[in-house]
Amino acid sequence: MSTDDLNLPELEATGKVLANPITAEQEAERREKFAADLAPMFDVPVSVQAVIGRTTMEVSDLMHLGEGSVLELDRRVGEAIDIYVNSRLVARGEIVVVDDRLGVTMTEIIKNEGA
Image (cartoon, rainbow, N blue to C red; front, side):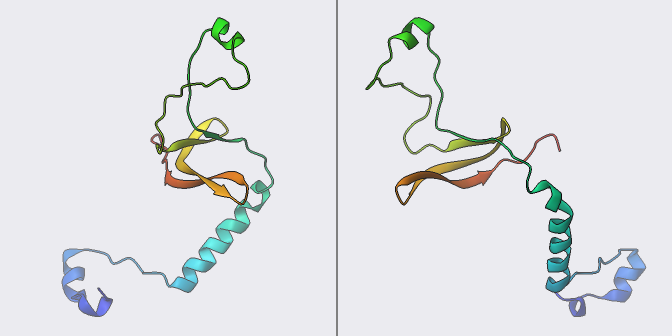
């Protein structure tokens, strides 16, 4: 809907206020300024973990593990893995192969419930 489609006198009479829409150019400029403001943070190291699953076992069972031992995890094949940044869950994803290495593609961003 464009501003031409709106009945401006009617909106003014009801007290409704129209927000000034921003252009794509203004949005790009806003993002550049935001990125520039964050530039000092870009070099801060963070710990990233991709957790494929967890299990609990007794120390005596742990001592019997050796090459070829299999640990049963709490996840099923194809289930999303958890991605943590500084021990905080931030996303879920899937394991992918990139060249001859494993990687993770994020499929879901976890929003902070407290914010």
